[in-house]
Image (cartoon, rainbow over all chains, first blue to last red; front, top):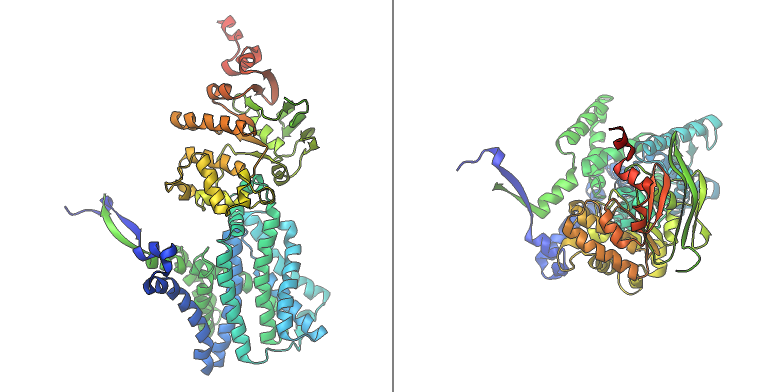
Length: 340
Length: 259
């Protein structure tokens, strides 16, 4: 009997290999090991080889670094939004604080980049967390709006009070010792952070974070201080942003107002939408697509934003789940039509 | 029965705008009791639970737990002292499997100090303890139910999950906000002995209920609320004789006089 669309439905079933490799049998054969490692290896090798492949074109090599900076930010955004429940538009603030912290440590105390970066990351994250403390009881769109205020406010304060070089920014910051150090340091940071965060959210403490997102009242009733966990979440996300900002400063040998730019608040969200929220690796994929696209579109001038918007809209309308979730489903499950 | 009450609520009042949700409610709960709180819809039962557990701030009055003042303390601090609650509208972590829901309370400072329910957290992994608690509360161990997503569990299991979340903290008092409502007869039949068992384990329970038949079987003492006031207190037999209680539940007898 031929069936109309109405009386059949698509059924999704986990592939046998997925089910097997979920358990201890994951290491029973090379096939299963490959199944688990292959996607991770693609990401690791892809990012590791990118600077080498692009070494002929310094412009695109630099783009890899920028992708990494945005990836760190986007990961932080995804973690905070999908695992802690705080939609933060403060990306520009994290980058700016990290950038200025690194620049000041470098120019005032003469510390080399490999010391200023970790210090700026930690110090910046502490500053961001402390400044965000009053907003932590806010939820949803309210937190988003207030967090958007931070980078705007910081830029205006620096401008108005003419501190830290005012509109000129801080000049004369040391660069990385060479371009390979810059590239591989950033690639390493991204890879370590992706896998670390993915591990973290599966640990017990990660479950508490997810609890705060799902249902903060129940977490309170379980005797856990939710503001403490929200602060820890902001600390992790802002540390990622500050790390990116500090690297950016040493890349450009300059820290300035443009590091509080809204790009750093908006592009991570776009990357998370394109890549797939809640996967933590999706935002990295999103950045790998969006940042080069935005570079390619530079020739179009201001039309760039229009094209960018169309791409984003198309993603939200046609593949709102994002690339990573879609690909993971195809990789782990097969689909078939069944009569009902 | 010890002379000192475990939980003592004195004259608490709470206004929501112009509505007096609680007015001068007092109650004492002694260790090992099962105290029932009943009353018609909107009589302030859940507000009372919220006030005791710190989820809303009261306007006047005081709450003492184990001799310590806990009035208007933050909910997580009150829960850490061993006074926990379930929610009337079930609040599981929908994106987590059932047993992972219990990792959150097991990870709390209180449970990490005491080891959680039966101190199991000091011996096994939290995952194991979580499955143990679920088994004890009526999730079939060898089935896939403890490992199902909370979003796909039926009401009966969700109510048990609420109770399990309290147990994981190794509490002294559990305030159950309607754990029996919405259950089928067979689910209820297994829930009642479970609550009796918890009492025998030494847990003090306060039960807010609409299911009077089951509640009267369990509770040694019942408190009746109406329009935010305590209108009766006593054993189940006693409170039903109060004219105010009859009126609250069945309407005024005076109606018949006019007919």
